[in-house]
Length: 478
Image 1 (tube, helix red, strand yellow):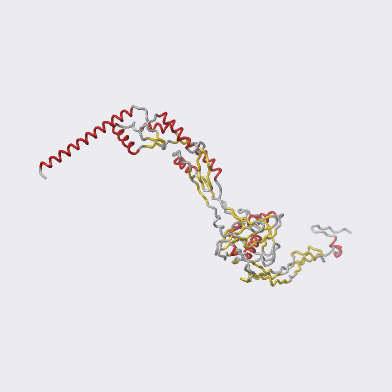
Image 2: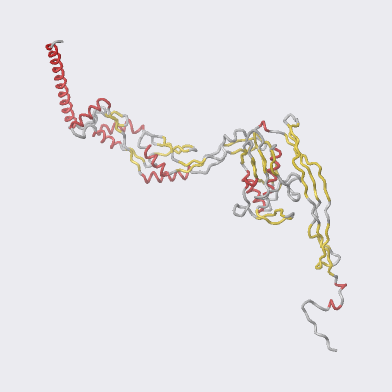
């Protein structure tokens, strides 16, 4: 291309650029004029909306009226506050929250009217391309909000509740779900509400809580279907302190879940027996004697739990008989415990979790073990080899007791030997297992008899009868 051609091309480019510049200047002038004219009006700029409601070209009064007719009625009057145990519904008014549509209208009026001329022009260009939606501001009465949250806390705060199982009179298992423990965090919830409710369309807000899940959930009880074993023992409600100890200990056994392969310990479950832990003084066995002791009666809880574990086909790990038979169960089926020394323990040798229930009603202490239907067997407990051995009698001279009289100081008791056998049968009456659980020996107790050695009044000499201890008699003068 020669020089002449180049000059023609450059000339055309220059003309085009000049036209563009002229047009740009003209547009800017028009925009400037438009901006200046708009500044003098009392209308909202084009492409402006408030919370989605178009208010372009409206006056402040018209925009306010449109919001009141189209938007405000649609705003949720109530707010759902979500927490782990459900929903608490309250009004925005109760929360101290108020929307301010008039503030939104004032903000909409300011769009395109603030800043320098160039800034106003830039705003109008952005409005033409993108538009502008003004949010409705929200005012929060912090004191009212805190007060309402404190009232809500009083209603939703709660301790965790374990999932529950009840057994009907006909041995049917019924389940009730547990409940999450909730502690409302007032300050954190107040901040969360203030942030969330800055949007007047927001209806659902999650409260900030500290949640404590139940130690036993309904999922934990999924495999609990039937009663595997049930046993009860009698007690005397008139023995108030002992009855108190029974109910306190069995309450700590109640609702205990034992997973497959886990061990149950009576001592670990019930805990130490002391006045500090709520136990009272009641009769206990100590050194083969019945004496007052703290926590008397817990051995009956151990015995009742031991028997139901036998009947539910648990694997026994540790058990010891009393030093003498007890009145509330057959010999060979009792289980003594001493905290820190002697325990009653068994293992869940089944393939599924079990649940231990227990309580005291009327004059019966009861325990049940629940589990999966496929783990349900027929169990028979057989006492055999029962032998009785006589007891010795020992006479002890008693100078305070008249000669010829006798009084029993310690009652004698025959010794006993007994063997406990457990047989496990399938539902088809097939013997699955036969096991000797233990051989118990209850030693005989010697009877102590006090035998009087004190002479009677007829056997005393005159000198013996005329004197008395501690009195010195003067000789009689002839």
